Length: 153
Image (cartoon, rainbow, N blue to C red):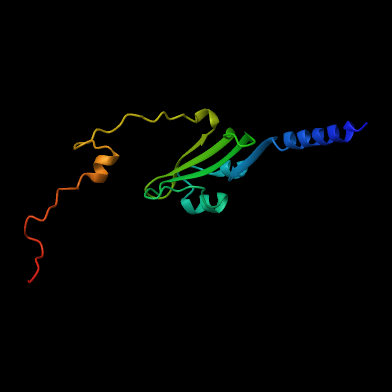
């Protein structure tokens, strides 16, 4: 009978710990109304009409105002592990030089590509010194062989 409160306490701690490690689901971004997206007509609607219908885009390139992106995604992660994208929707609207809609594209998780970065090192010219060679490399290079201040000048 004396061990029952202790066992209940341990079970309570285990249950609390496991319940804290549940899946965390998050939604981010802009979810446009499908009726409004379907109402956008290429070569008829302009930037102003698109902004009136959908609002400000999630992203505009800094130096290229011809592409607007409306971005949303849903992710899941367990405790502190890396998140996994479960749903993604990118609405890409391209404008021509006269600010009329020229193209509308939808992208999803299936269109997502994993980029494998190049891990090679860039070759550089010059010496390849270690830490200590760089730290103590100038010792003895600059001497007092004249040219410095002298007493009595």
